[in-house]
Image 1 (cartoon, rainbow, N blue to C red):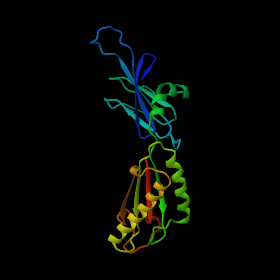
Image 2 (cartoon, rainbow, N blue to C red):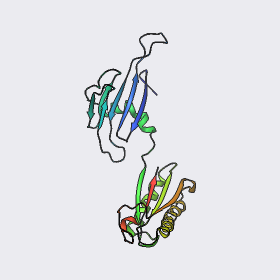
Image 3 (tube, one colour):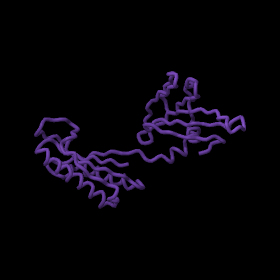
Image 4 (tube, rainbow, N blue to C red):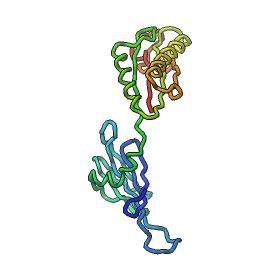
Length: 216
Protein backbone atom coordinates (compact mmCIF):
# COMPACT_ATOMS: atom_id res chain seq x y z
CA UNK A 1 0.00 0.00 0.00
CA UNK A 2 1.18 3.53 -0.74
CA UNK A 3 0.37 6.71 1.12
CA UNK A 4 2.03 10.02 0.13
CA UNK A 5 5.11 8.21 -1.16
CA UNK A 6 5.36 6.22 2.07
CA UNK A 7 4.91 2.46 2.46
CA UNK A 8 2.22 1.52 4.97
CA UNK A 9 1.99 -1.87 6.66
CA UNK A 10 -0.74 -2.42 9.25
CA UNK A 11 -0.81 -5.11 11.94
CA UNK A 12 -3.89 -5.84 14.09
CA UNK A 13 -3.99 -7.30 17.59
CA UNK A 14 -7.08 -8.22 19.68
CA UNK A 15 -9.31 -6.09 17.47
CA UNK A 16 -8.54 -2.92 19.41
CA UNK A 17 -5.30 -1.41 18.17
CA UNK A 18 -3.13 -1.41 15.11
CA UNK A 19 0.38 -0.33 14.20
CA UNK A 20 1.46 1.36 11.00
CA UNK A 21 5.02 1.59 9.79
CA UNK A 22 5.68 4.75 7.81
CA UNK A 23 8.81 4.58 5.69
CA UNK A 24 9.87 7.97 4.34
CA UNK A 25 11.91 8.24 1.11
CA UNK A 26 15.64 8.05 1.80
CA UNK A 27 17.52 11.33 1.68
CA UNK A 28 20.40 9.64 -0.14
CA UNK A 29 20.10 8.00 -3.55
CA UNK A 30 22.58 5.32 -2.52
CA UNK A 31 20.89 1.88 -2.55
CA UNK A 32 22.83 0.90 0.59
CA UNK A 33 21.41 3.71 2.73
CA UNK A 34 18.39 2.42 4.71
CA UNK A 35 15.43 4.80 4.82
CA UNK A 36 14.53 6.27 8.21
CA UNK A 37 11.27 4.92 9.57
CA UNK A 38 8.85 5.15 12.45
CA UNK A 39 5.84 3.19 13.63
CA UNK A 40 2.47 4.56 14.63
CA UNK A 41 0.42 2.52 17.09
CA UNK A 42 -3.20 3.67 17.42
CA UNK A 43 -6.04 2.51 19.66
CA UNK A 44 -9.27 1.90 17.75
CA UNK A 45 -12.69 0.66 18.87
CA UNK A 46 -13.64 -2.98 18.46
CA UNK A 47 -15.49 -3.11 15.11
CA UNK A 48 -18.35 -5.20 16.53
CA UNK A 49 -18.87 -4.02 20.10
CA UNK A 50 -17.50 -0.47 19.55
CA UNK A 51 -15.77 -0.76 22.92
CA UNK A 52 -12.30 0.73 23.44
CA UNK A 53 -9.78 -1.19 25.47
CA UNK A 54 -6.26 -0.04 26.25
CA UNK A 55 -2.74 -0.73 25.05
CA UNK A 56 0.69 -0.33 26.62
CA UNK A 57 3.36 0.41 24.03
CA UNK A 58 6.96 -0.23 25.10
CA UNK A 59 10.34 0.42 23.56
CA UNK A 60 13.27 -2.01 23.63
CA UNK A 61 14.70 0.06 26.47
CA UNK A 62 11.63 -0.64 28.58
CA UNK A 63 10.08 2.83 28.39
CA UNK A 64 6.36 2.76 27.73
CA UNK A 65 3.20 4.82 27.27
CA UNK A 66 -0.42 3.78 27.75
CA UNK A 67 -3.17 4.37 25.19
CA UNK A 68 -6.67 4.35 26.69
CA UNK A 69 -8.88 6.60 24.54
CA UNK A 70 -10.39 6.16 21.10
CA UNK A 71 -7.92 7.35 18.46
CA UNK A 72 -5.04 7.70 20.92
CA UNK A 73 -1.70 7.02 19.22
CA UNK A 74 2.03 7.04 19.80
CA UNK A 75 4.97 7.27 17.44
CA UNK A 76 7.86 4.80 17.70
CA UNK A 77 11.39 5.35 16.42
CA UNK A 78 14.12 2.75 16.89
CA UNK A 79 16.35 3.70 19.79
CA UNK A 80 13.92 6.25 21.22
CA UNK A 81 11.14 6.12 23.79
CA UNK A 82 7.54 6.15 22.50
CA UNK A 83 6.25 9.64 21.89
CA UNK A 84 3.68 11.15 24.26
CA UNK A 85 0.18 10.03 23.22
CA UNK A 86 -1.59 12.13 20.62
CA UNK A 87 -5.02 11.75 19.05
CA UNK A 88 -5.80 10.80 15.46
CA UNK A 89 -8.93 12.26 13.92
CA UNK A 90 -11.36 9.97 12.13
CA UNK A 91 -10.11 11.27 8.80
CA UNK A 92 -6.51 10.49 9.79
CA UNK A 93 -7.50 6.97 10.90
CA UNK A 94 -9.20 6.45 7.55
CA UNK A 95 -6.19 7.83 5.67
CA UNK A 96 -3.68 5.66 7.55
CA UNK A 97 -5.67 2.47 8.16
CA UNK A 98 -8.70 2.60 5.86
CA UNK A 99 -7.47 0.03 3.35
CA UNK A 100 -6.40 -2.39 6.07
CA UNK A 101 -9.66 -2.00 8.00
CA UNK A 102 -11.67 -2.67 4.86
CA UNK A 103 -9.60 -5.78 4.04
CA UNK A 104 -9.78 -7.29 7.52
CA UNK A 105 -11.96 -10.43 7.75
CA UNK A 106 -15.02 -10.20 10.02
CA UNK A 107 -14.45 -11.06 13.65
CA UNK A 108 -15.62 -14.55 14.71
CA UNK A 109 -18.93 -14.81 16.55
CA UNK A 110 -20.01 -17.40 19.10
CA UNK A 111 -23.58 -18.45 19.93
CA UNK A 112 -25.11 -20.71 22.59
CA UNK A 113 -28.25 -22.78 22.07
CA UNK A 114 -29.87 -24.62 24.99
CA UNK A 115 -31.78 -27.91 24.99
CA UNK A 116 -34.46 -29.70 26.93
CA UNK A 117 -33.24 -32.41 29.28
CA UNK A 118 -32.21 -35.70 27.67
CA UNK A 119 -33.14 -34.67 24.11
CA UNK A 120 -32.06 -32.69 21.07
CA UNK A 121 -35.14 -30.47 21.34
CA UNK A 122 -34.25 -26.78 21.56
CA UNK A 123 -35.66 -24.57 24.26
CA UNK A 124 -38.14 -22.01 22.80
CA UNK A 125 -35.79 -19.05 23.27
CA UNK A 126 -32.94 -20.94 21.60
CA UNK A 127 -35.22 -21.85 18.70
CA UNK A 128 -35.60 -18.12 18.07
CA UNK A 129 -31.86 -17.67 18.53
CA UNK A 130 -31.18 -20.25 15.84
CA UNK A 131 -33.15 -18.13 13.37
CA UNK A 132 -30.84 -15.19 14.20
CA UNK A 133 -27.78 -17.40 13.61
CA UNK A 134 -29.11 -18.43 10.21
CA UNK A 135 -29.49 -14.77 9.22
CA UNK A 136 -26.01 -13.94 10.53
CA UNK A 137 -24.37 -16.82 8.66
CA UNK A 138 -26.16 -15.95 5.43
CA UNK A 139 -24.48 -12.53 5.45
CA UNK A 140 -20.97 -14.02 5.37
CA UNK A 141 -19.55 -14.64 1.93
CA UNK A 142 -17.65 -17.82 2.89
CA UNK A 143 -18.59 -18.72 6.49
CA UNK A 144 -16.67 -21.39 8.41
CA UNK A 145 -18.95 -22.83 11.09
CA UNK A 146 -18.09 -25.16 13.97
CA UNK A 147 -20.90 -26.80 15.97
CA UNK A 148 -20.06 -28.46 19.30
CA UNK A 149 -22.64 -30.41 21.32
CA UNK A 150 -22.61 -30.56 25.14
CA UNK A 151 -24.66 -32.22 27.90
CA UNK A 152 -25.10 -32.07 31.65
CA UNK A 153 -23.88 -34.91 33.87
CA UNK A 154 -27.08 -36.96 34.02
CA UNK A 155 -26.60 -40.36 32.40
CA UNK A 156 -23.37 -42.12 31.52
CA UNK A 157 -20.41 -40.33 29.99
CA UNK A 158 -20.61 -42.47 26.84
CA UNK A 159 -24.35 -41.85 26.42
CA UNK A 160 -23.71 -38.12 26.76
CA UNK A 161 -21.13 -38.20 23.98
CA UNK A 162 -23.83 -39.67 21.75
CA UNK A 163 -26.42 -37.11 22.92
CA UNK A 164 -24.03 -34.22 22.39
CA UNK A 165 -23.32 -35.46 18.86
CA UNK A 166 -27.04 -35.76 18.18
CA UNK A 167 -27.57 -32.16 19.24
CA UNK A 168 -24.64 -30.87 17.16
CA UNK A 169 -25.70 -32.85 14.10
CA UNK A 170 -29.26 -31.55 14.35
CA UNK A 171 -28.05 -27.93 14.38
CA UNK A 172 -25.63 -28.62 11.53
CA UNK A 173 -28.39 -30.19 9.44
CA UNK A 174 -30.62 -27.18 9.98
CA UNK A 175 -27.86 -24.79 8.92
CA UNK A 176 -27.25 -26.83 5.76
CA UNK A 177 -31.00 -27.04 5.05
CA UNK A 178 -31.12 -23.25 5.25
CA UNK A 179 -28.58 -23.04 2.43
CA UNK A 180 -25.16 -23.20 4.08
CA UNK A 181 -22.61 -25.34 2.22
CA UNK A 182 -22.11 -28.49 4.29
CA UNK A 183 -18.40 -28.49 3.41
CA UNK A 184 -17.99 -25.44 5.67
CA UNK A 185 -19.85 -26.82 8.70
CA UNK A 186 -18.35 -29.31 11.15
CA UNK A 187 -20.15 -30.98 14.06
CA UNK A 188 -18.64 -32.70 17.09
CA UNK A 189 -19.48 -33.64 20.67
CA UNK A 190 -17.78 -32.93 23.99
CA UNK A 191 -20.50 -34.73 25.94
CA UNK A 192 -20.40 -33.80 29.62
CA UNK A 193 -16.64 -33.10 29.63
CA UNK A 194 -16.71 -29.32 29.07
CA UNK A 195 -19.38 -27.97 31.41
CA UNK A 196 -20.15 -24.26 31.64
CA UNK A 197 -21.32 -24.87 35.20
CA UNK A 198 -19.26 -27.54 37.01
CA UNK A 199 -21.53 -29.99 38.83
CA UNK A 200 -21.34 -33.40 40.53
CA UNK A 201 -22.32 -36.47 38.54
CA UNK A 202 -26.02 -37.03 37.83
CA UNK A 203 -26.84 -33.32 38.16
CA UNK A 204 -29.30 -31.72 35.73
CA UNK A 205 -27.99 -28.28 34.74
CA UNK A 206 -29.78 -26.34 31.97
CA UNK A 207 -26.74 -24.24 31.02
CA UNK A 208 -24.70 -27.36 30.31
CA UNK A 209 -27.30 -28.78 27.89
CA UNK A 210 -26.14 -26.70 24.97
CA UNK A 211 -24.65 -26.43 21.50
CA UNK A 212 -21.94 -23.88 20.83
CA UNK A 213 -21.91 -22.44 17.31
CA UNK A 214 -18.75 -20.58 16.23
CA UNK A 215 -18.86 -18.63 12.96
CA UNK A 216 -15.65 -17.41 11.31
